[in-house]
Image (tube, rainbow, N blue to C red):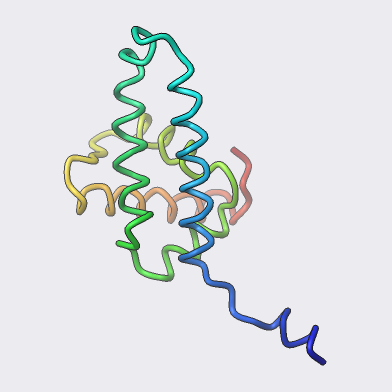
Length: 120
């Protein structure tokens, strides 16, 4: 009975996504910091965009239903969002609102086009 109750416990989508994105960002940061200074200099745009996206996610700025979609994406979320940002005309991370809007639009588009499968 106790084991059955544990499996029925509600998943904390917000916390799970925060942990995944924090882990992915820290891994990205560690890899960048291994590079020579000039190479880091030329990585500044990726650093900026991933920082802005992760900040919004890590600071719990989104609705829980969006965190559920982000959770459903699985591993590699930050990389996916960065690549989608690069390919999305007029995408912006200039403000928290812009970044939040981009994340929401991106993950909803992923859900609609992939059927919820992470094929990135």
